[in-house]
Length: 443
Ligand SMILES: NC(=O)c1ccc[n+]([C@@H]2O[C@H](COP(=O)([O-])OP(=O)(O)OC[C@H]3O[C@@H](n4cnc5c(N)ncnc54)[C@H](O)[C@@H]3O)[C@@H](O)[C@H]2O)c1
Image (cartoon, rainbow, N blue to C red; front, top):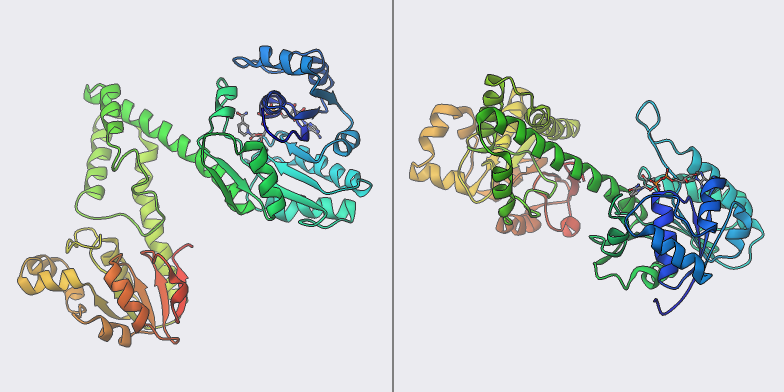
């Protein structure tokens, strides 16, 4: 039981709404459930669950018997009798793939009307999955227009993604990976902390837009994982390898595989292993007539990322360009399949006046280690390498930062001048102290 019991209304009593209603009432809150489906209201009114889920029938019976649950199809009455509304109406796919927001817009318009005559501050917590920007750009203005009241003062709008999975929804409700709250006011953050702060998971507060986006990123990541495992299985079958054993071993690596490694936005992948092994995998698949659309798309997506950097640099309209970093990864002199080399070649192809700094590559060239590779494969690039970072910086109007070397980043802080423009592919940990014009690749 929570310390502070609240009056909460829930709009939409499908999978998310019904489970939330039962769990919030179980936790001690007084909950009013609202749906346009009379059948669902009747069922809950009789202590029965409108959805089939493990444990929900028993819980629904209990909470309805406790007297803490009421159900209605009257939106105004529900809003009047509560201080917080959770919105869980469906947001299914439209035929063209866009999100169908009809139910959400309809109920939100009605909130505006209902709020007009309500005394006291009210809080709307949108839990339906919505396209980023929906809550702040579409739903909050609808409530403002209908009610004549001001967001963040008379009412709050928040977005709190729901992470439950059908089939284990009560367990998931109580044990989410985290609570993500997108809210603009302390009032809203504190209320949500009161309701969900007892959960053992981390409680993260962020912007409304980020919270909206996190939900999509989580679901899409799950989709990528499932598809990856299934593509592995199809190839394994053709190669007479046990896919369960392979994926089980893959998952044992908590350093690089099942971890946050490789999940930070940055520049394209490259190097002597990833592209070649991916190509060999796709060739194996082709030999065995196995179709792997996800894996087959990766080199193209990587190329699109390099294109993006190239277009951004070209859009600056400068000719004198410095590239800081050339190897495929900082801390190495390996230039094989470095996307920064590809980028340099494209800039040269457009006649740009290019100067390149990469401490490791210059050093290894001096020692002769990488000299042969540069002389044989990219002699046109080798001639543009300069051993001095200050010289390269002075040469340029636009600087392209590919190096992730912290020492280089620190030196740049002092070298960069207000007339410089920096395009960051690395990315820098904190560009706020820079005196030059800063642009991230896509951030
Ligand atoms: N199902 C899941 O596992 C899950 C998990 C996380 C997030 N979500 C998201 O949560 C949202 C709800 O999903 P769901 O599966 O519970 O949907 P659902 O279709 O099961 O339920 C939606 C309910 O909203 C009701 N409704 C429609 N218009 C209404 C209105 N004007 N007023 C009151 N009620 C209204 C419908 O009658 C229905 O009962 C979706 O945006 C979904 O993407 C779902």
